Image (cartoon, rainbow, N blue to C red):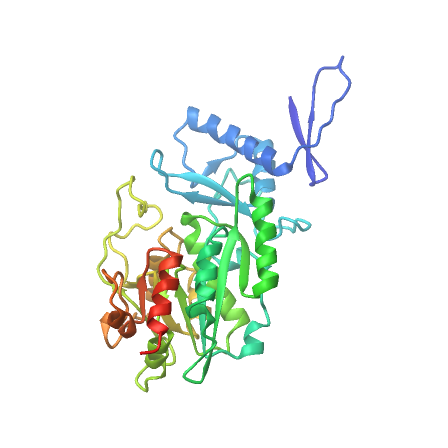
Length: 390
């Protein structure tokens, strides 16, 4: 069997038997590319000591396959429980545009290439849903950025009816935006239509073309940083906050307006010091030595919610060019901060940022800035009680 490209737009499969008429069929290029790469990879793994870091090129066909894969997809290496590595394909920046010439060409003398991409860098992605004029219209002092799964409509609506509805606090403008990626599965088209309708209704939804998954949280965070740097540089502060969080905006604004709160190179929250990298392959937080060789992470802020001066997003995005991505997003931001020689700071009162509060007490929620909750309905119920007249 001979496999060859057809004008860069698809694949043709032709029989070599001379007594048969030529037969053509057009199959979606993504599936065939993936199938071909899987077949070739499996064959090499079976017969040699194979590493995903460096792939030997057995012939020109494999070069063509890899080049086409790179044209349409970002190839991502993630840890898995059995073999420590998983290939994951995400849409490349120009997947739906004419393929442009690669910046670095493979020499005809080359016998091996690396398929490792710096997948966390936001220039690899583009926005499908965007609100590029939001900050120009509102001129916010504070921007709350909420990474959330595409199907978590209840979480978004709960935030919209509680702390996300706070547009002016202590005389300062506040905006809340949600970031989602692409969804998969058989109902992906329906989910996408619902997201587009939700975007038209609320004008607070951002979507980028990475696949929304737990392992892609680092990508998600870096896309948030990129949006802040490119769409909202005029804001004074921003906060990355998870969708299951309670936020007391009044207390947060009091912290940010305090005269001793820095306006540059400032980031605070729940500070994590001297944390060991998890090497247990069965753990949710497993990171291989290949992805992060040091035994301990640099100091970082717990990802549930951290606030920072808005000069940092651009600096973090720039630093990420030098920091190899790994799948623990908050620790990865910490690695970028270390590269920038910027130290995360504890809040004046560490009890302002709480992980869990235990049994609900109204007076406790009146004092904190943030804590994790159990459900969207719990957020609604607590918010109503906290806001009731005394």
